[in-house]
Image 1: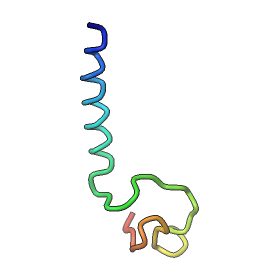
Image 2 (image 1 turned 180 degrees about the vertical axis):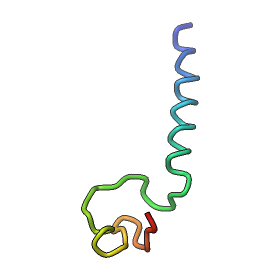
Image 3 (image 1 turned 45 degrees about the vertical axis):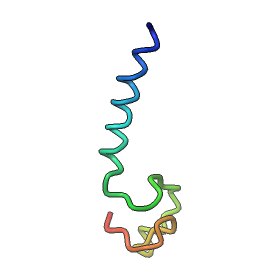
Length: 51
């Protein structure tokens, strides 16, 4: 019965993850290389990144 708490935890985690990454078309993480600040293009997404 205790494992039923896992269902709402997974749902909440999925909703938060989807809200954070909903406008992302490429990888949902940043490796922090700084290329997007210097060149305006993310090396992971291989396109202009307006962020």
